[in-house]
Amino acid sequence: MWIGISALNLALAVVLGAFGAHGLQKLTQDEKILHSFQTGVQYQIYHALALLFVGLIYDKLPVKHLR
Image 1 (spheres, helix red, strand yellow):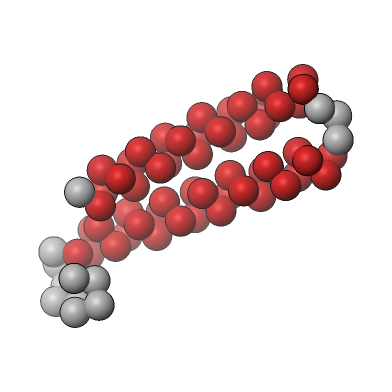
Image 2 (cartoon, one colour; image 1 turned 60 degrees about the vertical axis):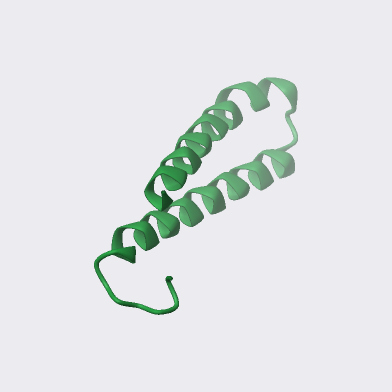
């Protein structure tokens, strides 16, 4: 389940990143907005990768905090 949710979040981050790189630049020329959007997409990727890591070790390690 966690790996699937992570995969969906990573796919969403890729879609948002592509929109920010191509579509958002056409809508606004404000560098501050573009930078903020890029930062948000990076955080999305970091969190999705962390969730993927949790999903991978969920069954492998008997860590009580993960369960």
